Length: 214
Image (cartoon, rainbow, N blue to C red; front, side, top):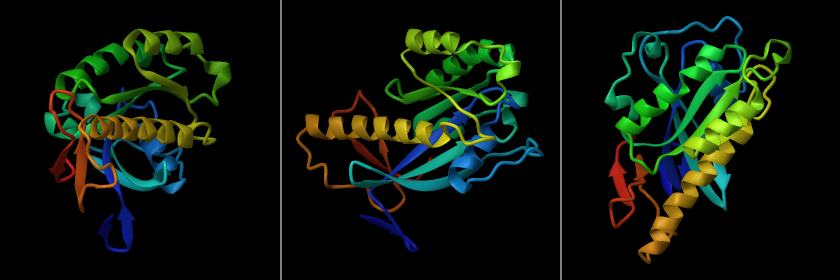
């Protein structure tokens, strides 16, 4: 068990939020980590992240979730943003078809900068705006199936499926890490130390414990 101040956790997983500007990434982050939503949220330049700990299979999983914070408007996302990420939420706005069209570009960038074993969930956000829907649920499902992604529709405004999205992706990441540990006969009760992440790399023969969050 690792400790940081009063907090303890078994695993620390870095998850990145990607997708076009204005699709609601920052509100998804604030809804999950602080149960807050702001209609006035504005894009800011830089990178920000927030963390929350959940339980998966009796293990405490600390999710460190990174938000592009406006960089996507300038195509300024760097490899440092993706480094060490074991999961990603690729978000589009169900009321803006262009944000769905751009999913494949985001997916290519993600795969160019991360390990091919990264767990990716396609997220159709703003599901509360049913009367403005421009992307049918079936389109999101079929794209996710084609690209081997998990899929969910959310509303950061009314909280629909936000908790479920993170619970699902963190559970899948944990299962990948656990499976690798079992494959090499490790004791899965051994956990990363303080400030370490499990690096999910299928090309390695072990589950690396990489110091640092990024």
